Amino acid sequence: MEELLLTLAKGLVEKPEDVTVTVDAPDENGVTYYHLHVAADDMGRVIGKQGRIAKAIRTIMRSAAIHSHEKISVEIDD
Image 1 (cartoon, rainbow, N blue to C red):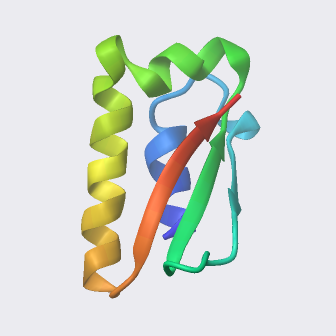
Image 2 (image 1 turned 45 degrees about the vertical axis):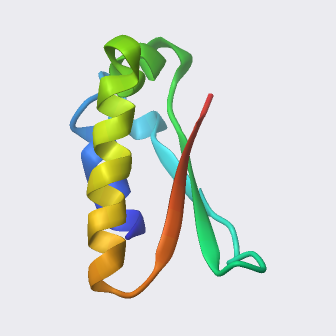
């Protein structure tokens, strides 16, 4: 899952070397949080107009998580 998020984000940004992902342990509800970190200059590219790209990233990640029987949430941090 982490590799999928990295691949998606690196394809969108101008500075792919600054893209990192941190993963938190599952919480009491079994939800694993993925924190996407990008350069400040690339934040707009990852979020998109009205959050459309961010929503698409979250949708793709949730779809992949369903196949592996996981519950995830993607947070975009700067």
